[in-house]
Length: 586
Image (cartoon, rainbow, N blue to C red; front, side, top):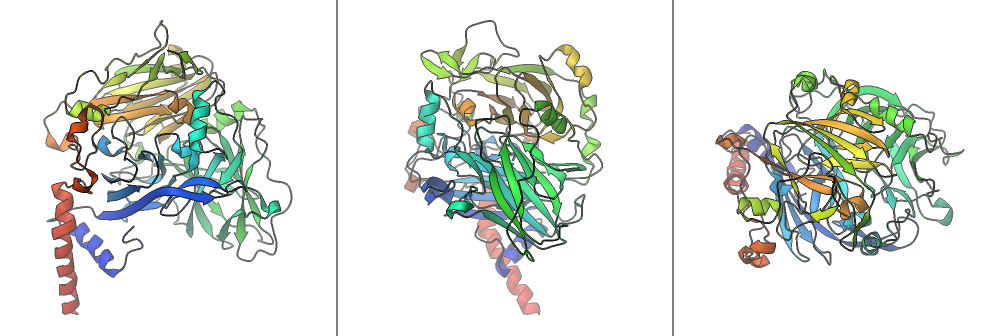
């Protein structure tokens, strides 16, 4: 980032832009990121990984509610790239979502500038590459959206902030892995588990990841499962995990000795350093429901007064195949109804349990099968085929034949097929979605552009009577939820964010083989304050719109919206003038 932590002039600029109504109510922050291959040894053997600005995992995007982010991304990979901002809602701006339904990928050697606002959000999220199976090689990093100063946090401010990425890991490249997924061999078990890119191989000289802390202090641990296939159990030896937030929602604060974190999920815990510190302590991420994976990921929690290395056995995980434990733990998560989050009103002020449902979708995933001569995976019998022209661009330019607004509300009694089928969502509708898992592994469903209320989950088949078990009062709101094998999960979501939004299974092999779809939400109102952002002036064009594409040298690097030009040119001059006046007044 060009000014974070900010020097004096940058601080003055941000403050000036924040308090001057003539310019903008919310500050802009600017980043330059280069995505490239690096050499690293996550499991003790040198291999190629994807890093950002020379870092693996990538840098943390640390911003505050309502800030405007201008992110210039240079693609130094040898194949096209998109970054998606997992959990960031992009209000009225699905153009910045970074998935193939809304963006043409950034060609190798090109740059593209994302411009979005973290509008009315707080919490812990992460970004990653969304195309070509690249996430299996890294390219991910953390997103922290802090509360504005006027909105209190529902706990004492911690003494430090720690971001951890727990992940399954493969020594094969993402290019070889995607070929495996396309074949009948499928995705094999991972080679190990890593924490922040380090594996547990101290015995052969490779380092542990180490988190340095001070005794008696409390730290906020933001833990993300950035892996591609494996549910993981997270725990810290001899320390309690006080859950306070998950994916943008403050939760009822409960202590856990361990937490199952499924693919794509993010949690925040407060951890107090209340041990003697006579030695280090193990931080552990171990596989769940995967008996073929023997090794756990291990890092070290090191007190400043530590007298020696961590010792003893690793802290015990839950019983390996006990999905009932994991489901009951998931059901225990509750929304903190009395706290504010991005706004001062309590999180419980939206009475979701009292709103009439306008549409119901029962979405069933099945194991991969051969369809039209290729291995594919389906949702409601349809395997999604990404068109050459992104859906959002096709919608903007009224190009027919790219997709169909006909995704079925329930599985159809017909042969599975490959298609580009989209849900026709009703703007400001209230939708119930039931995910039914007919596969043998845990699946994580993610919805871009929204947070949904996870109101119920259970084993067996969902029926109309299952609604009697729903939590209609304080269900947690998040963007990713697990669905256990042979079980269902139900969510409720208010479609108040116009755009073209991706709904997918975050397990990468399932996503790659077609278990995704898009939700089109069009605002029919004329009110300009409620309409979507227009197509970015720096948009990349592909498919049937390729004739509109300019050469890289002719393209506008930034979005070129009047507001951003105003802030970044005239705004800077006015800010520098204000600083000069302030200096002369001293």
